[in-house]
Length: 147
Image: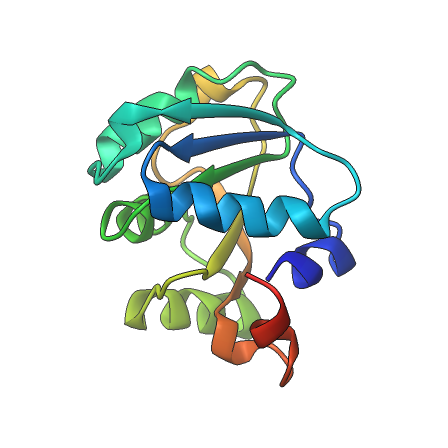
């Protein structure tokens, strides 16, 4: 996933990460594959948080923290992605959202784009789901070599 993020230019400037060991290990694997290190903030309240708590954490991020990566836990992360995504327009966008509703497995990546002046303005339904990829969607080998 780290290689996919690098190839697609999805590298974050900032990261919000749960303090859980598993999320920290996942982030460490991502960081090892990236040349530029983002600013990282570990937050205890992200551990097993429901999507409204995750949304509240995103809203506290500085405006310059964009792109921003959130590393957390299900079902909160999946529910947050679904809550933030706009109703998709076009076949490809509908297909991405449909895959997202089916399963959000470990190490999946949902990329949402927001037309907002700051994270404080973030609300449900404001995001465009521009990509959704699961480890099994990656070419053979890349999901084994990367997080």
